[in-house]
Length: 299
Image: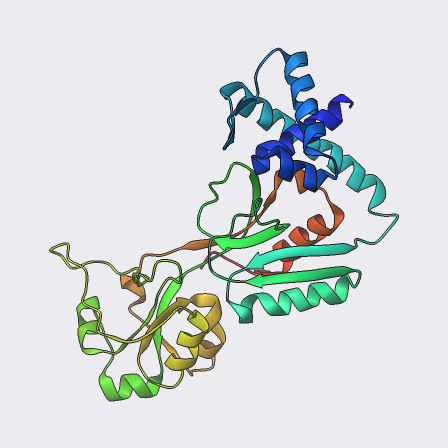
């Protein structure tokens, strides 16, 4: 097997931590994978993996080599993309995972389908933290800072969490002016599906360092459910600004306590580094980068 082929095998094994799974992905036998890695280690005169009957892990030399190999493969794939992308339309199945913010992502995804009719989208709508490589995703959209060294990332746009309620609700219950006032209001709360823990509201604490008391009236793992309930005048919800922007502009919802909130989040698109230049992945990344937050100003 040539050097570039050996590098591809090495990167795949490093990603999935299994000769058998790497062989399945590459379409070769596990023994062929093992022989390729052995020849590569012999040529480099270093051990790239620690092997046991239960696990495969990178050595320090293997981890260093992996980063160089990923850059090499990305450059090769980028060159291939530039040469062939003009000759044929992107096609094939694209498996992606996006958070459950249908109103934000679905218009962008349907627009993508119209633009690239030969790409089949397999969408996983979930807020759980998926393992991009192990679960076979081509790309995922998530918030928070990327931490997986196996992935490449691009920022899509920023958002803020805001507190909102209907004008009718505030007319009946009063408008909170400081976080302590929330103790007398019905708070509509989001809970994390994986842990069951309530998502904290990004409020300044009181001067003594304590957190404001939130009187919970409704709990849901879906922020879109919170958006529905808050519009019925049943309490105050903490929601991303992109979700409530239109309702606020139309006067159906009112933002409160803006000066007491400290929050800024970022949406990222993440994808396995070895798939950087695949035509279907590249056009999807470019499409989301251009369309998800087209006029985002970070507010």
